[in-house]
Length: 239
Image (cartoon, rainbow, N blue to C red; front, top):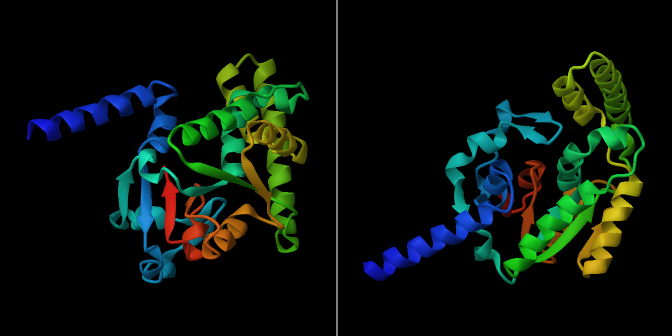
């Protein structure tokens, strides 16, 4: 019992040490992820009420909570983990959205992504980043709508900035920023320097990740997009 208690305390100390490396929300999403196992069998019962949102099937993850378990990255040492690079890139832009919207150079989003990569490497995980490729022709209208939304958010951000409302301006800059091919290229260059593998999907990264998982080229997929479950990927890490 003492030995078990000692091991548990050591594990807690290690987790607390890791969480000090980054903010609480990121620590929660990264060091204590929830894995959904064998979700394919659970999905059909929920599909009647499911609707699509920008990051997958709305409310699917909430209703699959009973099929999840909390895990630590150390549990995946030696495994090939596929990562939807767009998720990290979008989060990485939040710290430099104003600069990016105004055309000023800022590589904070690259540092954010590579920090995540190095955490995975520290736990012996083999990361494989998967980038979005070309736009799906059937999503042309959706992409036009997103472009219009970003343009409107930029106008609001600039107006809030002129009015001296820094909080509103920052929130709107975060909504206005877009991840461009050039930004993806800069992250790929950083991956090349660290010899981290990456793949550019023909179209969207989530379908490429599913393809690679089914082909056993990946052991686990790390994402925030619930579409991976609908694609039948049976080992998915979410925050």
